[in-house]
Amino acid sequence: MEKNIEEKRPDGVSFITKSEQFIENNQKAIIAVAVAIVVVVLAFFGVKKFVVEPRNQKANEAIFVAEQFMAQGDFKSALYGDSTSTDRYGVGFLQVIDKYGSTKAGKHAKYEAAICFLRLGQYQDALKYAGKYNGKDQLTPVINEMIKGDAEVEQGNNEAAVKHYKKAAKMDDNPITAPFALFKAGVVHLMLEQNDKAAECFQNVKTNYPESSLSTEMDGFITYSQSL
Image (cartoon, rainbow, N blue to C red; front, side, top):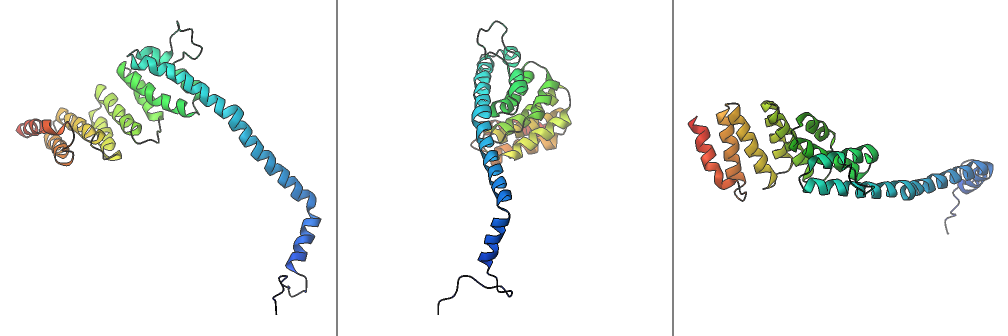
């Protein structure tokens, strides 16, 4: 015999009947909830299309100009913009951060601002903006950590610098940034007269990153560290 799809509860009332009664009794509330969900969905896509996407586009156009200044070595104009520019998007990284900080370009501008401040010798500002950057890609977070190390070295904070360099070396174990960060850490260890630690860093570069362009130069640094 075919099983009746309407399972019976002990009271003899089917689940289906109960569901129908619930819908009938709460029809207005259910419709209100459904309408609210539609409104939220439409609002989300509306905000994305008419607010988020235009802001992203404007941010990308603005940061492009700042990046051109940076590429030319004009770090001041890259940060603050060029007052002689007729381009309405001719603003600097700081304006991009201020106006479009929530966009991808606005977040990336913090990283580039840190580089510019470092190159201008404004080390506290370099640390400030490097500290605000939270990149998700593979390369820039590592370089950003080394920027912090460079800024600390320039201010004489060598212990702090070593920590940043060693952290950068561990963030991504690749043959480009990792040996470079370790080399910097080794040099700062020498400055701190921590010669054994310096030799260890240089040996690490030579042993673990033989494909690095730095590797062939490490013998001299190792010998120098061990001779002190």
